[in-house]
Amino acid sequence: FLISDEKTLEKIIASGKTVMIAGETFIVPAPEHLVAMKLHSLVGNKKRELKDFPDIIQLMTANRLHPEKPEIKAIFTKYNALDIYNRVLAAMRATDGQ
Image (cartoon, rainbow, N blue to C red; front, top):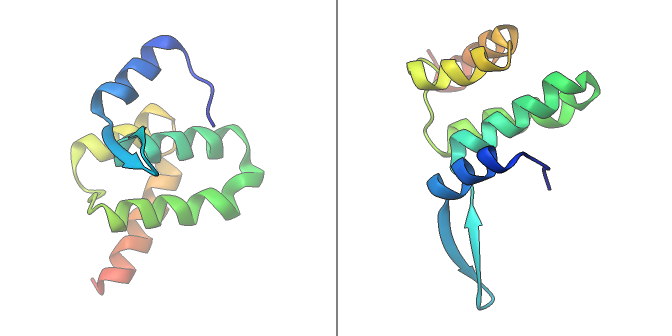
């Protein structure tokens, strides 16, 4: 769970995907919002890097979020995490064989 302000929650809900699980309706956040949440967590607590950094790579890879896209880089910029962005970019290029 992540505690957020009402404005942030509204954005997450608006861009989320509604799914049914065991007969219950849930809203799954957009991949971009999941990456942003992971960045928020990582930037706020460097001890989470071993957990959150691989999660960011996996989220981006599984959802085909290309780090070169301006809207993806903007997420990292928002969290003042361009050092992490550069590492993500290098890791994703290495896994793509570039």
